[in-house]
Length: 346
Image: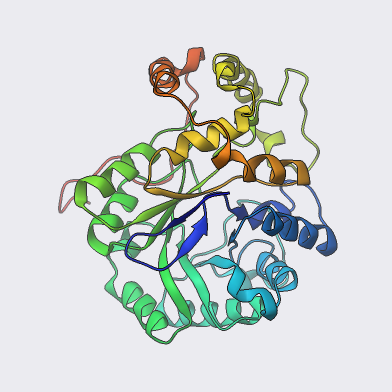
């Protein structure tokens, strides 16, 4: 494992972290608390120090699992990131799964209440990285929200703060505007070898603006495609979100994968190469692969120390990206601002 530090902070994390949504929401299979805690501890034992949760994941369950996995005696050994901004209490005890969205509430009072509730579930006195969950342009521009985050930071309830973009493939101008105006410690977004837009543009915007923002990259394996294990016969169980994707997603993905098999080398799997490709950019502080079994933990934790991608391989990947890796273009429905409206536009 290797470790990186967010610019101008003392927040050091493993370059491969553990996104807790896979074991807390039911969209990647069902896990008992004991099974989930065992995986979290295996990740830690493999060198993972960053654990990324959200208050909406399982309606608080992801945070409760972290409290069970890492009690006070181990709290200083892990970096806990979580997210706030949705009002899942509006539905009482309805623990709906997946990406069916709850209503947002970014009011200062709601952010304070959500932070206190997260601290109770985590059984800790501070969150290392608090992220505003799927914010849109009005929230980026709302000074009261960011003043509240600074207030929480001064109170010691959060150490650093940032934003998480989504829930579609990614939001472009929300991220760019936030980076340029707010200079957050972290921006979390979707980015991988097959899905490079708008992730590449977001990270380039930080370089262009001279921002200190670092990036957390989720879905680095394109929902498992870049692990290289799917076949034409692959099916997904009931409840698995991949079951609801069109068949063309699997078929086109397999075509792309066959054209990048050259990345598989002695001592380096395709899944490891996918993480290495992201980590070439030092702005990528950590990756958050979707982890749902022990074998993935062992494979992904070793990715930073597997043979590095060569310049020849990187150039070849860039050329393949220009032709969509030899497959038809997928239709992507963006939910965020993918075009920048002129000032004053309705």
